[in-house]
Length: 263
Image (cartoon, rainbow, N blue to C red; front, side, top):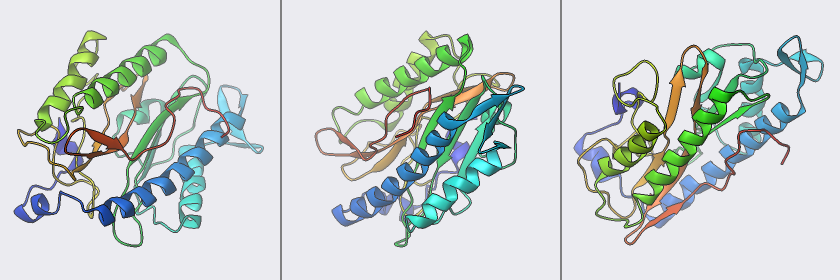
C-alpha cells in the first residue's frame, strides 16, 4: 500500500490547479496556522497528564483519543476553520490505522499520533502531523529518530526546487528508513504509504510524491514519512511544503519533538 492510501486526485483539472498562486498560498498557510494552534493544545494536554494504572488522565478523567480529538476540534473552531472530520488521532496500535477517528484509551509508553487537516472558509485545506509519547521505550525512540531523519532526507531532496522528480522525494525518505532497519512498500510493519501528496481545495490532490511527475513552483505538498508496527504503535511527522523555482518553503512552523511540552 503506497500513495493510494491517501486517495490522490489525478484528473487533468486537479493537475491544473496543483500550482498555487500567492493568494492561494496565503489561504493555505493561514489554515496551517490554525492547525498548529490545535496541535499545541493537544501537546499541552499530553504534557499535563497524570499516569494512573498505565493510563493517562487529564483534569481528573481518563484521556482517550476521542476526548483529545474534541479538544483539538474546539480550538480549530475558535480559529475559524472546520475540522471536516479529518482530525485523526491514534494511540498505540490504532496509530497504524492511517485514518483512525475512533475511540481508544491513551496509555503511558504508547505513541500518540495526531494528524490535523482542517478546512478554511475559503475551501483550502492544511495538513499537520506530530507524534508524542508520555514514557518512551526503545522502539519508540528508534522509530522516531528514523522518521525524523527520513523527513530531513526528503526535504533535502527538494533543495533544487522546480524540476525535482516527485518520486525522488519518496525514494530519499525510504532509503533512510531502510538504513534504520524499517521496511518500505507493500509491508505490514514499516512505511506502507507514500511520502506525500498535494494539498489545496482537496486534502489529497496532485502531485503524488510516488509519481514520475516533475515538481513545479507553486506545488503545495506534504512531506510525511512514517513507520508503523500494529503491535507497538506508529510514528509520523508531517510538514506542509511549497515548492519554489530554486528550492522550497516550509509552510509549517511547529517543532518536532517526541516528549510533549506546554507551549
